Length: 268
Image 1 (spheres, helix red, strand yellow):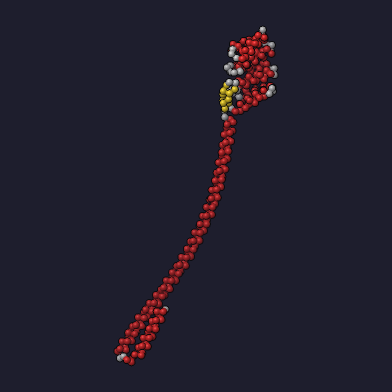
Image 2 (cartoon, rainbow, N blue to C red):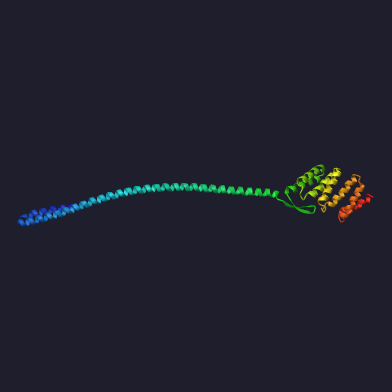
């Protein structure tokens, strides 16, 4: 705009100067001067139009640029808002995942604890049923823990002097664990419980069963001596003497053999 004002002022000054000097020039010179002035005015007009167009172009470009900036800014703001929403959504999902992971970790730890407790419980229960090595009356063998428990329970009843109950306990043990390594000893104590209740015939039968099933049993000499005692109680002195003599022959180094010799002397 300042440039346009200067151009107009320059034209006005030139016209004033031309008017003041017009009389000093001849017609040809005046026409030449007018043409030159017109040319200069055309040049200034073109320059002015050019400046105007330039200004208009700059305004248009500015508007377009401003419009694009506004549009780009709006698009950028929308993209930023969308991105922020996505970030917040991801953060929320991440928080949920962290919470889920923590819960899963707790659940896993609880499952592992329960599994460990269950495994230990199962192992303990299995150990209760696993055969164990036992030693009874000089014999070692594998027995179930139930066998050991029931035999010891029956023997405890006998040692308390409850002979009738001991008979039932040992008879039940033999019935339940007929193949057990405890059975020969069970027959021995069953016979002793029957002897204590004066059931001599059945006592002799169980002592003989022990001898049949395990003639080399540690209690075998005592079982033979007990048979002789039952025969004495049944007034079978001859049978008792025969039994004692057989004992001395079969088990000469045993304490029962020493006892048998003494009794043979008394039975004469």
